[in-house]
Image (cartoon, rainbow, N blue to C red; front, side, top):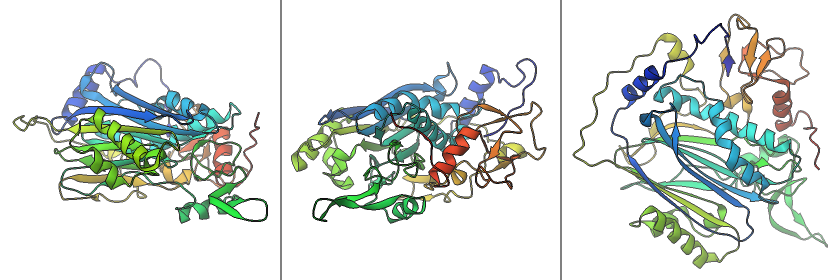
Length: 427
């Protein structure tokens, strides 16, 4: 994530008053209000969810508030789902630099989501448990919605006067040819389950392990080519607002996205979540854990005057650091003009693509320390390994070209790319 300069005292700290002032200046229109609700029916007890609406980028500043919602659909037990629910948010926030205003924070968020997902996977695998989980993690900050997902727990957006937009990608081997190719190239085998007599049944799975998904958190018994690197999409709603429906596959295996949205229109969030679950059970029955979160992003009263703000200024260094990555698609309209603007989208499973590119032209920081882009630990300059370098055994790596990884995270990266076994033992 860059280099860290250590000096005496607290010269690198930004005064709280200055941070709050930045937040107020970055607001371009009045913030919407949120209404949300959740409904669930349990079959195996492996679904977990989170709804947290009291988060703040700047402690003590209500104008810096944001909300997070998450669905974690576990398999082989609920251990990975519970762990992700409890620790994923903290790991994401630890990867965001301090002292950023709102716009800078939102631009840094996609990369932090990748780092947080990988760190959560790495920390859970240290426990030696074979459980795994999908993860669909949604951050709502004003009119901006950022979604990161692995697996097949989907998030959709329903906005007035526009088609339903799917903000996630299903990482199912049966349906995703690109993911099948990646898993095979990384050393996995993809095929159906063969029963006695040679008959093939069920969907495509990855072997060893027999998992139907190509991305998840956990699943250490399957292989590191089942990666925790999320698909990330960031969009900005207009001031007409919209509705998010976040749900596990117990919903989506029963209902198309359009039907789920249509069945809940006109209902408040809590009743809407119940209605979506009810409709799924009516259609398919309770064959799997079924969890649904509905979040309504509600515009302020029409007569509210927008706040006056000063034009935003960037110096050259800020513009370079927070520029949009070339891998991200340019801004475009997802639906009707003026309804939803796409700010960022990236789905590559390669860590080097997702952590960006930065270079310290001096070759080292004044303190001699680098920061691991995934686990955020300080590492000596002689030990930092570029995320863009070749194999961990390569003599051609250039450790001064960032972002940097510690040796442990570099082993993780190589294992995910099929360059070496993970070496993690299952207990």
